Amino acid sequence: MTEMLAAKVTEAETSAPVATGATDLVQPVQNVVDTVSDEVQQTTHVLSSIFQPMINKLPSLIFALIFLLFGLFVIRQIMRILRRASKHSNMDSIMASFLRSIIKIVLYMLLIVITLSILDVPMDSIVAVIASAGVAVGLALKDSLSNLAGGFIILFSKPLKEGDTVEVDGVTGKVESISILYTRMVTPDNITVYIPNGVVSGGKITNYTQKEIRRVDLFFGIAYENDIDQARKILMDVVKKAPEALEQPAPEVFVSGHDDSAVTLRLQVWGKNDQYWPLHYRLLEDVKKAFDENGISIPYPQMDVHLGETDEK
Image (cartoon, rainbow, N blue to C red):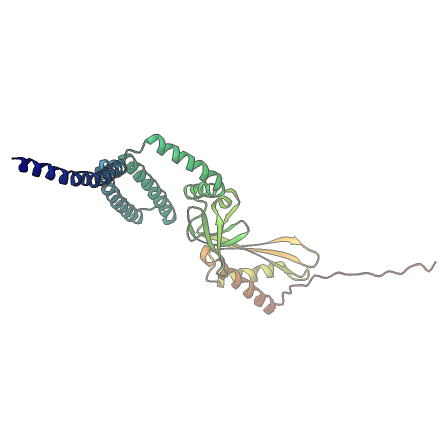
């Protein structure tokens, strides 16, 4: 019995240091586990605070994306319909193109606003952003806005259109197109000129081709010794032979002035607008030849100097 008690005491003394060492080893491991757990919980909380709103908004994002794609498709179809309708209407091609551009911009702006509202963006913020952007753009592009307004004035008042030959801001040429900001013209020597719409709408416009017919005015000087009636008959005969000249309104020849060196005759002949310059050049050449054949002289400017006797005193 005594030996058994001694053995148990010895076993207890032997096992006591082992329990103490195990406790010392487990405690640091437990601290590491607790620290890692805290970090994981903190990281999970941060990620949750970041991604949870996105997860909550995910249905709205998907719906907004679908609506945006559908809206783009609808706008494309609307513009296609408007393009076909303008081709079958009597609307001027330049005006139709201009209106389509404005409608397209307005539709895109509405689509963006509606898409933002689907995402629960406050309308007050949208309106404030649009207003601020409008003020900034208005200050930066005040000249462009003037040209934009000029484009509207040109298209609705129609002082000129595509294909017209006009004189604007000292430039004469044929109108090729009227865009939102500029009017494009091509001069007779094939130079392209872009004139701001604000200048076009606010300046003087001379439209040479708006009317179907146009009058050619030419001046011819004959010597004082020549017969006016004969010269008038020669001019009328030349006009009758010109294929570009119209019989109605009837051509006219009258004396327009008694100049220093010649009697000036004014010839007025009507022709179609697209035949103005061929008729103009033909008459200049044919009248000169007819005058030469009939002895009608076109005098040079001259001055007669008379010398009188002077008193020697």
